[in-house]
Image 1 (tube, rainbow, N blue to C red):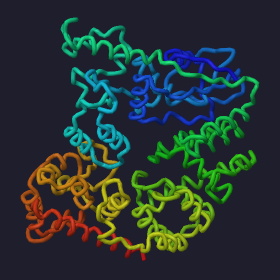
Image 2 (image 1 turned 120 degrees about the vertical axis):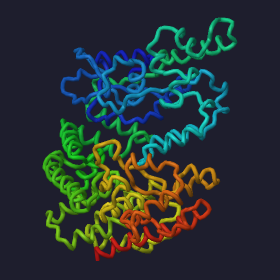
Image 3 (image 1 turned 180 degrees about the vertical axis):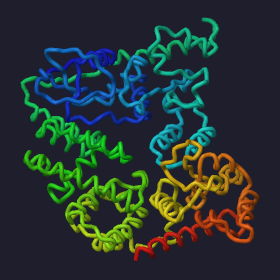
Image 4 (image 1 turned 90 degrees about the vertical axis):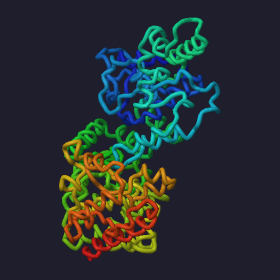
Length: 568
């Protein structure tokens, strides 16, 4: 085992020249932009950023996978397989190589912005601004403009780094890290910041800060290289142990490493199936594929037995796993009408259904379909796999393996299966209730208020993209000093197209809602029924907002009850 020091730019050059490669056991590039931001911040401040672990090998019979950045097709006598450090090196490569990098996944293009006028000390930084960006990065909802409007209220000048944002992009005091790292001097950046000469009191400070940022290319990592005499199996064991010691890799990543070590070339099979699913609209994570394979082989969900499963068992079960997952996904879309996997609060639902359908040899009656849906609605809404020990709960359901038992244990977990007004209190757009609300409203034919187009997550035109519309406009509620949690309550959200949302904007609810109501010419318009909107016009004023929420929660709970009642 050898130890050496290497600068960031040297590691990146080794990746570009194909000297550093990725072993098949490695997961793909998964970092979010906020993680890249934090890495750059650490290197800028010269904080410790972990070691790099590699294995020197001839590479003749060792399966590898692609980096998320382009590499030259250079042949070497020996290669270094990167065991720990892929996320860091790939992120820095995306920034430092700039336009020269061939990004394999366009969604992972990265730029971070640097504040020339940042506070001197890190304890002067306001943490809530970083927390805000982290929330935006991970938020999963249908609102297209919510994040932008939230950012307008924040002052980012107390931050050092920020993920690329419209608000700072044209600010002369904010510098693109990618552009700086691909420049030769600071002249253009200082001019842009209106530094006119050496006598400007800001010149020395800004110039030093730009130099310090550019110096991250010379940041030194400690590199540990395992001896080439080690076997692939032994290296895999080290990889698993190193990553088990922390929280950087999920259990599925470690299981994948052990499977691919035993079954060479299996990663390509998994990724090929993953691509097939994606082409059909199912964006399935590799971890779910691995989990389903293990469950169908062992009848339980824990990854502990992975290393003991013989190779022939993996090979024999792979086609069965593909069949089970394909059927489960098609059942969800075509029978349960879950058009997009984002409507699930957990992908574990896919694993459970795949195993169940496999166990009953795909003979599914109408009665079974209804019971599955009767279980799924409260399980998804109340978060069966979104709290506590999720793996243990899934294992429980796999071993029970029938809808009647799932219903019994779900009732024991939550006390009841019904969904009432109390359940809906304090729920937001990231909740299972919100996801189910969309599903059920779509089931009953909810349409956009202007185009009369049925609500769907798959609308082609951007103008018809579904957004979460605040029925009582949020800006009006903010002015009235209602708390954010109350403003964004799901009882104030309706599903409309982007154009309709923009047209209504901040219109007074007592005016625009009454106009929609009057279109019924004496009867209640469909939109009020489909979207569970109270017809009592006295509730549309800002001061009656709490009463509006209460009335709409009652209507939404009744809609849930109607749907579940029809299932039996």
